[in-house]
Image (tube, rainbow, N blue to C red; front, top):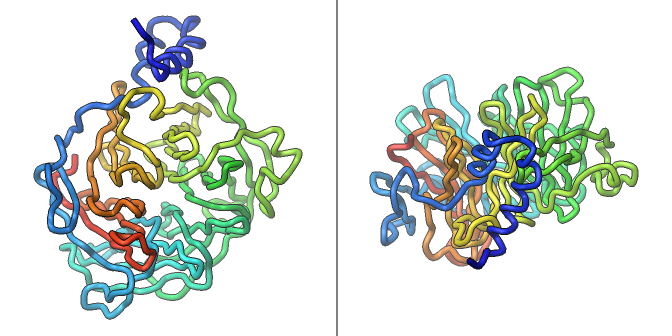
Length: 389
């Protein structure tokens, strides 16, 4: 029997540490990385809907905004190159969806919805920044918008107010991609979109204030593919990337092309596009594992991993930058499955960005950054609703 290279890599990675740990470990280790399989939502439709979206049965899409055009009847012009986003509940029963602009002029816009999901407002919440890529929501209701260039910083914004935002320089100066907050460990985790990038942790001096604290870069110990990975942390300066700090660079691990980052139920999920992996870090134990790697199984559907979010059921939704323009789902539990959930037709020169669920978990927002023309001025922001688990 011929052993496929992907299978050999998988067996090699799992076998080294498992032999000494017994059959219980083998059961979990073999189940850990997500395998291609049927989606809990069923197959995608054979043809796209009127908006160019292929969806499982029972789901529908609508277009919320288009770059260069007014959002509904608000009179506010939607920004170009929509990127990372998140939803925030309002005391009125509605919610706000924030969306970064990855243009040189940067910034962040927001759309306000009433309790029934109707668009009732749109406005700019951050200006005067550059290349705002992804970011992350905080438990105290602000949006952290990340600048993706070598001198990039993180800006904290109130999603309900126009024209504001405060730089949080203590969170580092590098090509920021995304950030996630661990409310129990009172720490922030950050990805860096660079071939020499690191995975960072920020410990605020007085949580939840982000004005001061210690920035750290991660070192990987053990083998995350074999279930024996852990992270330890090395203090670094916030004034430059860890890779340019010689004493730090030699003690920390490269994460090639850090992308999305999200916290859910005590786990930090993040992605790296250089090796097309989805990772899971558990701060309480220090554990680090690879929960998806397209090299492990033939015909894995998820390529070009990018932004990530998690639904109420614990399903991980990963957007593609490239590939065949899908949002794929990775199911939780001991037998993880990866499968397509959404596919955009006619957007081959674009990327999917900003996946985020409404507070009630019934609507998923995301954008096609460059639409059907491949131009940053042709971005489209969607909403998908239906029977989410």
